[in-house]
Image (cartoon, rainbow, N blue to C red):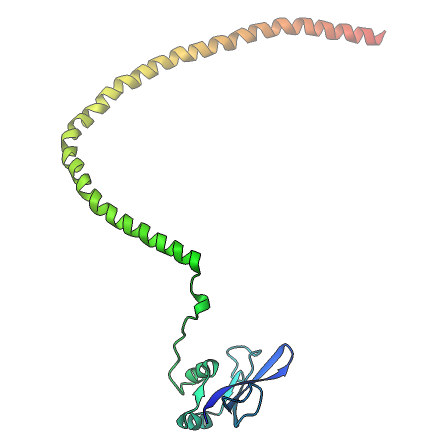
Amino acid sequence: MPVKIRLSRAGTKKRPFYRVVVADVRKPRDGRFIERVGTYDPLLPKDDPDRVKLKLDRIKYWLGEGAQPTDRVSKFLGQAEVIAMPQRNNPQKAKPKAKAQERLAAEKEAAAARAAAPVEAAPVEAAPVEEAPVEEAPAEEAPVEAAPAEEAVTEEAPAEALAEEAPAEAPVEETPAEEAPADASSEGEADATDK
């Protein structure tokens, strides 16, 4: 008779409580069992000692008789150091879907293309590096030529400043002429209201 060490659900709706039982594999989950060997209360905090209670001597006996623990129970037994901690396997549902696999394949191709591109570009970059010392001499002369250009810009700047000042003076002269008639008209309006 094949035997499993598994969980059997008890408790009420939305308040689960599990018994760790040794049962025949042909029996239903919550059905008949051979022996109760522990309890599991998932509502308690993970660090609570009452969360998982196991009768380790009886579990070792049944493991010796050939009982196979389920995934959850084997995790409990691994934490209790009764058996080696089981390796978690990645189920098929967790694998990337078709579109994600296509994107990953495209990224790998792009990475391979980028890896191949620098190998080809390295000899091309080596040639300009050799020519660079020849071009350094004219580069040193360039700042000398740039200085007269800067002087020309500074010479033009005062002319522009004078041009900007001239229009600013013209409106100032017109403003007092306009104010005088405006004051007279406002006095006239005041006289008209007084009458």
